[in-house]
Length: 454
Image (cartoon, rainbow, N blue to C red; front, side, top):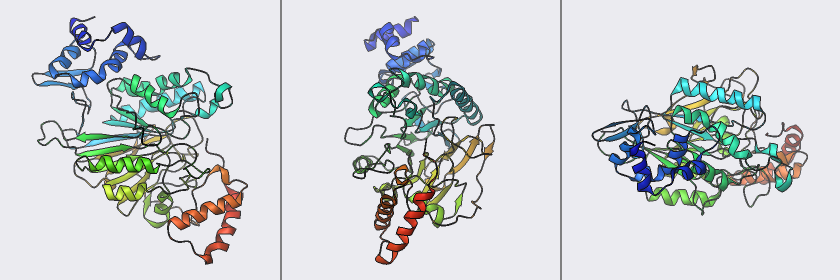
């Protein structure tokens, strides 16, 4: 072992062999495992000690008299994300990768990631949920047919491309991620324990439902004067099934999480912000029918039946955009009341979709300091490397969708009717004259819902 790293490990009171055994996943190099073990201490130490380890060859950085920085990365030696010198910061959103269904599909998803990472060279990658198809593990002993280690093996494979690209990355969880042998908290623990120096995922507070609730601040470019955050990215856990107290429909960003966001934001300097969730909020229905949109809608919006208030809080806190996944056949975006509501593009080869004729892709969002994030430049980076700016939605939008769709509504028009009534009441639009219309709509919708979302 190089002398610099031996001194570094001694100062951190770590045993090298134990650290590597604890943190190394299949496919992870010894250097990456070592960085996963020492990252919290690495950030806290003086820059001279950081450089000592880096110069010894453990991590890909450049060093000078004032400190070290990661080569070709927006992650500085102090652990902060920073805008580039040209005043931009590009975020690449990969969503619904759905690893774990077959070796062939997973290998094609690997190739997809490598292609878009090479073509885009982003400053940050966000995996916005359904990293795996945990449903393949249903039905075994203890609820899992996959056995111990299934999630770790999928994790090692699905994160290998971003680790190899040496690009900062972070995750928020989707509805299928905790259907195998690990809980949401255990998945985030795995991420934090093994993600290496470029992984930025954090365990969310106990007071907030779910696990993947946290934020990432983006600071001005080095040498840019004041160092207060110039932008902020919220990653919020939208759960899996149900939005309590409802026992049907899809998950939601719960009220306790929103309370935590509100309290936390009030204690920090304000910054133009965006948020990533997996399950879209109900306003994704409204923006399609009520506002100009670009992109495509090829399936009903499977949002949470109950509106917990994320849209309203976003308006109050200056969160100018909410990006989601979940609906593999939608990629549209629009702006409503100053908030952009946007889907990513179906990225992986597992799961259903995308529609015939579509390439898999990843949404890119380019931030600039101080800009209105509802108007940030955005495009889709396609699997073939092409960069596509979405065109105005020109397909007929047809009859308005009246409720967030859910699997439980199939064959149960009364449940569907209650859901429609709830959403109408939340919008203040319910009145006695609509009751018959809602009943007829419930019968029709219940008979015409599409396939289950797997």
